[in-house]
Length: 467
Image (cartoon, rainbow, N blue to C red; front, side):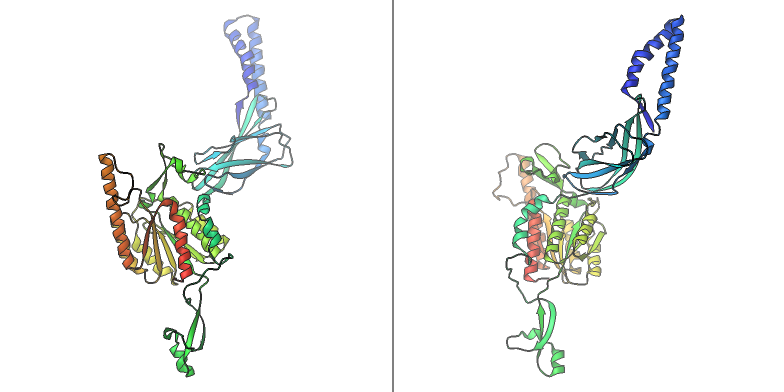
């Protein structure tokens, strides 16, 4: 319990203590005795008020939620519950520590007037998280007036509140609205299924027109007549998103301020000022992962998540349902870029050992560095024959061919910048061609189109029964 002088005590000091001290030092008569009595009386009253008021806030119990879930850039409300076991308090003020990773929608200092004894009083706190990740609320302070009003009594509560801030997917969901409404097997639109499926259904007698590949020769030998295997369309498939959070995932994505429509908080966290707002490539990867998890849940498929840098940091086996989506979301919301080179060989070995069933692997990696692309190409044969692999990356800002119809450079530095972008585009093109020979498609996408294109690829693979 810590006392702080109230305004009343300051006024008493101004009107009584200061004159009494002046008389005490400059007057040798009877007034000096009166000044001493006055000072002693004020000191005794202040001490008495302090000791009598020490138990006021000790009778206050506080209940706060242990876990708060929020979305980056969106208002999050939680409640503080106060329970008073002593006598009524006229008013109580409370305040939370204003950490830099969130801001309060209103004043961070609240007031309850009065605080009744014997019943719970709830106070709503509304905050806006400014950064994705895991944080904590550590301290809450209470303040009330002493019995005589000379002091403000303050008490500190040590909290253990975990605050989980998830990415905001509002903008991506708006862009994908048409896909959610028009695609899938749960809507009213008929979607043509290509192929005959891969799941074994039953054995039946051979009929004219059956493919010779489907004949079961062992069953034919046992029965003495031709027997054909029939298959059904696979309704439940395994889809895994593999996210690279090594050093290249920290590559910046710049967006002009005028294009930041609708208050996209994705770009407001690390704004560099000037004409551009800045985010990282990893942020887009995580947005795309959660969107794909949501779409896979609607399609009834099993969704898994893998993240890696110099080793596999998270591996979540493919499942379905709301609880599994929450598990994936809790696994990726704290991912941050690591200043290490990616180890693709260890990744491929882990995927080969843990995934025994054929699955669709959507890899979100950055292959703009030729050395990194070569290492990826060398490790890929470990899994590309067993699984269907699609690779997506965010296109570098200046990676485009010369004379591609963009604004002509005006300065020498812009000429060299355009030339460097052409070389980078050529290297990515060569990497795409090398991967194509292994049956792997590499897509370099604009940051705004990454989620839409990844979902489109997934739905096309599902409809064509390529897994």
